[in-house]
Image (cartoon, rainbow, N blue to C red):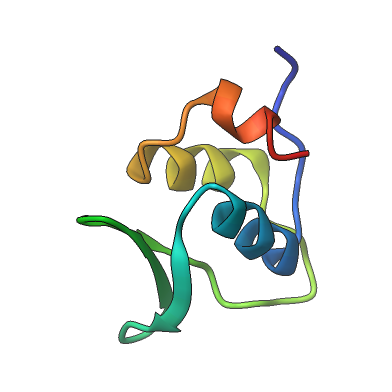
Length: 73
């Protein structure tokens, strides 16, 4: 498995939807996506992409394995 690559917020949301997450919905300061009882905070869109470190944390919080993530390409 290769390293995680930076990703835009729009692509992150699209791939999480393919993994069964619903949303994004407003959740305070940041939008959130949900799958069952798991809630993942989505960073607000900015000009820069979401880096590998933050992406890794989002996937870990959502219980998404690297294998699942790579299958959504």
